[in-house]
Every structure is written in structure tokens, then in C-alpha cells.
Length: 330
Image (cartoon, rainbow, N blue to C red; front, side):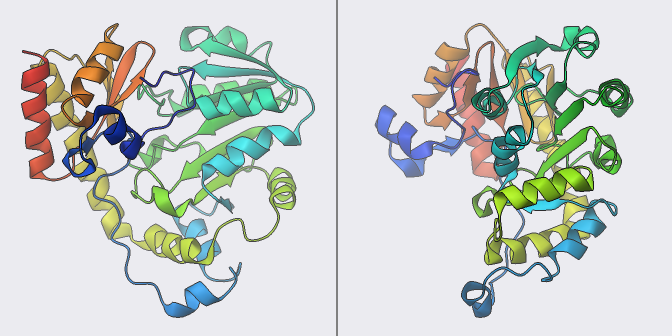
């Protein structure tokens, strides 16, 4: 079982197939929260593979258009920012709203900061004593959302004394009206975005960070040239520009998430929260249920206190999930 304190990630399907002695082709992977449909990548021109990445290839303009005129720095996935950002600061008192994507905790500790995990209910008071407050919004794994009005209040209080609010928005693209990215030019605010989840393009390792220019310049200098490959830049530019697909997916994913919640609730797995890309089931039996599903070739993501269910893709995947739910919950 993978818990919130471990650094195992979703999608370790080959390892699960080995551990449970079930051939790879029989598995339904619901462990990642990645769009199971994904943006349809067209064939790439041959020259994309032969040339070094170029900053004037059109990605800057496509990202400016998609992110509402906000400057962003492309990265090899938001993971590159997660690992590097803490290295830009001297020792800080860092609070991470938990549960949270475990790589954030690992990176700030590794950089020598004083780090603590904080319950959402304690965030208001914690803002007064922290230098850095970090959260995933929607929360990963629960899907809990902190409204932009509250985030702006926290940011103002932190920034007033030179502090920093870091918001990881890896799962927010289906609800862009809830994003803080439009405020990210202000000092004291960092927003992370990803192409891996909503677009289903985790394999190209492309993400973005938005912040004030000074911080972006420092991060760019630290990372050096060619952080995103030429093929990844080519795909990202076109995915960001495909507004029709984005609109259609936001609607379809939201509907699929509601359908998944109904499935789970109907089978006795209460799902009180989630987002367009996954549902959260709080349960003290997370370990046992994870194993029961895995024994039937359905891979979930288990955390301390609950399970995260990603979305099935096509009709046969929904039928498999329903059949396994019937077996496990019988």
C-alpha cells in the first residue's frame, strides 16, 4: 500500500502486475488522477526531433494566451519547480496543508527549511507564524478546494511581511475560474500548473510556474537551458491552443466525476469530495480495500485515511469497475 508519507506515486502498474501476479493487459489503472482520454497528439514533424528547443517556437505566446497574459516559465513538469523552488530561499518556517502531495514536503525539508504539516482547520492561525504556506488546490488527494478569496487573504498577510504562498494547481484546469494564476505577478505568490493531469500528457513532462519576474528569472538561471524538450514544447503549444477540446473535456470530466461518485456511493463507498479528475473515499479500511481491488486487477491510490479513485475511460473500463465494486463490497 502507498501511504501519504511515502514517495510512491500512482501509475506503478508494472510493479502491481508483478506483485499480484496478474498480467499487465488485465489491469484497470485508476491510481493517477490523469485524464484517461487525453489530448489527441498529432504526428510530430521530423525536424522537432533534430533541433534543440527554441524559446521563440510559439510556446510562450500559447501559454500567455491560455494563462490570461500571465508570464509562466515552462518546466520539465511541475516536479522541477517543486524540487528547485525551496533552494532559492534561506531557511524559512514552512507550513504544508495536509494531506498533500508528498514531494512538496520532501523538497522543502531537503533544502534545510523548518517544515511542519498543518490541518486545514488550523491554517488561519498558522499564517501568522509562517514564512511559507503551501497547498495543493484542489487538494491532492481529497479534492478539497480553498476559495480564491481566502487564498488572497492568506497571500496578503504573508506578503506583508515578506512571506510566500505556494499553490499547486495540478488538478484545476477543469475549473479555471478558481485559479490564483491571474494574481501571480504579485510578490509572495507562486502558482504551479501541469499538462499531465487535465490533458492526460504526463509522459511529456511539461509544466509551468507563475510568479513575480524576479523569482522566475532566478529559477530559470538555476535550471539552465532546455529544461523542456523540443517535442514536449511542440505538443504543449498545440494543446494549450486547442480551446474547443478544453471546453469539451471540462464538461465531460465533470460529468464523469459525478458518475464515479454515484457509483461509489451506491456501493457503500461514501465519496464526499473530489474534483473533475478523481474522487476521494475516506475510510479506515484503505489498506484492506486497496488490496482487495488490486487482487481483482484494479489499481487505486491508497493514503492514510482513504482511497483516491481516478476516472475510468471507456465503457469496458466502467463495466470492469462496476463488476469489481460488486465483488469487493458484497
